[in-house]
Length: 379
Image 1 (cartoon, rainbow, N blue to C red):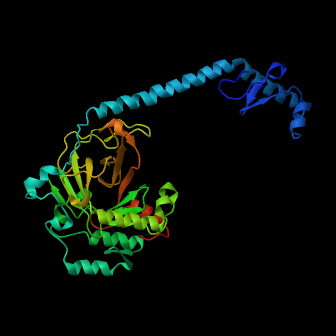
Image 2: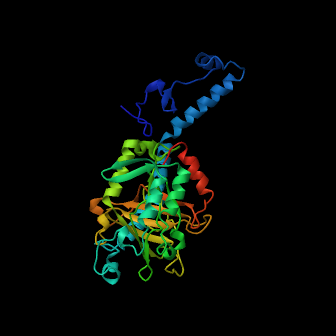
Image 3: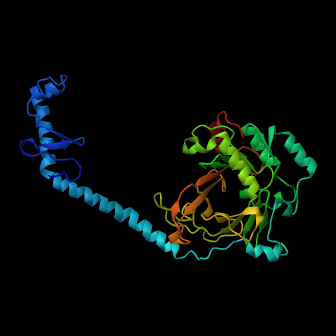
């Protein structure tokens, strides 16, 4: 029994052998009468020409099927050559340069600036809002609910943006925050139900080029309802799932550290491959405030000595945006256990997009895109 090598279907034998069209075997079509029997619409005087053309095509397939199969194999080999092999070479070249074991990038801050204290919370920041100011922010939130002692509330997206900006703009801290990190960011394309994040209530250690942002009130917002064209078909946007996400993140009380350095300018690769530093432009002479590329560590319970996430996180400034720092690629890079510290599979990444600028004004076109995306959903 023989098979057509590219089609995987049983090949007829003897006089029935003809050719393959749309994945099915067909008998010879030699006359207009035969064609009309299959499709009565084909009754024009030119039927014999149509039949001849079909027969010629089927005969070509039959005659050259071996060559066609060989061409398909060659195309597959070429695909492997120009895509997979370079991706593996570039990935391996990056892997051998990633120095294991991986340790927290915030450790140098502990003794030098924090008097040996390894835990960094919002209360560790030099300045804080007064209780009166925090109460004024709380009163602006409607439909509040308590989850294990933590207050959550609901607002319209435009009002939420305004609240997040003003209630995290802490005098004394805010003035020392780099301009690119001020404002409110939309986590565009994030598959989870979280939508907005604020980085501006943090502390910058310029000599080490490390920015530390502890989890604090009014710095994070989730979607309450499913936005239009929500990622992942809105799977993580049900209200029960959003409650789980919101309470889990707040309970973990993470502190985020960003270590800024020169953008590696590595090659961009086709998904699912990816290497950190492929979405930003290489710097020729990076300064402490260039902030084009940074590695991100999450420290659960504010513990600066530990790195909480197994993945490799980056923030990579995307070039040619409306203003510098208006959009960062939030890279998430994975690797299996046997790959060790090698993280070259990209997945779950999104675009950290600024929708409120450092002056508290809407940043277009991103602001309007966010409002349109949210639709009838609240924050």
